[in-house]
Amino acid sequence: MKITEIEVIPLTGATVDGGWPQGHEPQENLHTLVQIRTDQGLHGWGSCFTSGTLVEGAVALLWPLLKGESAVEPERVSEKLRQSSFWQGRGGSVEHAISGIDIALWDIMGKACCQPVSRLLGGNYRQRIKPYGSILFDEPAALAESLRSVVDRGFKAIKMGWRPFGRRDRKFDELLVRTARETVGEHVELMVDAGGSEQFWPHGTNWARETAFMLDYYDITWFEEPLPPDDIEGYIELTRVSPVPIAGGEVLTRRQSFMPWLERRAVDIIQPDCTKNGGLSESRRLAWTAFDHNVTLVPHGWNTAVGLAADLQLSAAIPVARYVEYLTPCAYIEELPVTPFQVDSEGYLEIPTKPGLGIDIDAEKLAKFAGKRTTFK
Picture 1 (cartoon, rainbow, N blue to C red):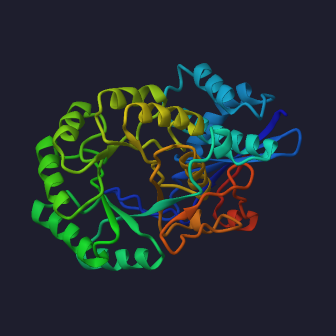
Picture 2: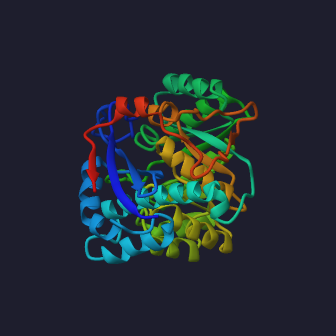
């Protein structure tokens, strides 16, 4: 089975606020879908956490290497793309595009084998998993209202991230966390994401350590990105002394970038994003390396329906998986699938068992959010 086409589909019109200081417009394009077609009629969906313009440029670079390749050898083909684009890749938008291609090839592989991707990744350790509703921090009253709406949608775990947490003073940070705990009660898990990958992050290890002790008082499940993403020494020191687990790694790409973080135990929880770090192939390798180093892996998923489906398939095949991230509300997750994701009464998501990623994309709904499409043949 050979690859004959790849279509690049930017998503726009319903982009969720990412918390950046320069502001946000729904028309921003931060996510791009790819669809790969084959000479035997099968197709696969992938998702890239980067703009359509960058994906299109990367696919133009990669297409001569991809055209006519096997559609059912995702690990070999994605590694070929990675190795062959060495001087223009090694991360960035080229790796983001490879990520989407890899996910789409796993989708095709599963459909060709009539098996869910999770089984092809090694087998199913679970049939469902807990999603955490992912939202931004806000002023206390607005935060409480947002938290109540997430609980009303059935979530039993919620992560709050970015502004205004960490941008004013310690008393205000504690007010936000106390407001959250009092709003949701003791039976909903809460995570805090400081957003240390924001440009010119002002805090260091001392701030992060003291904040971690405050978060422990409110029974926070983990403390995410408390430091800039290149401060591995700071993370090592913080992870050693923090009373709450430290999480990070969403900005890293390629398995080699993750190795020092795992080998040196710089975090308790590593968070690769399969829509940018190399796809399901790289994430599978990382998952087992993390397992061997006794580091928990939780997929980062500021995402689309295709990205969430990939995270679910990966999490089914990881022995110690506990959560997946679920950006909510998000039209790119909740409106694109033919069969919507549904949080059950216990706050879990069923992992799809249909062949491939296990979801179908609604063509009419996709047309509503699709920007200018580009097809390579």
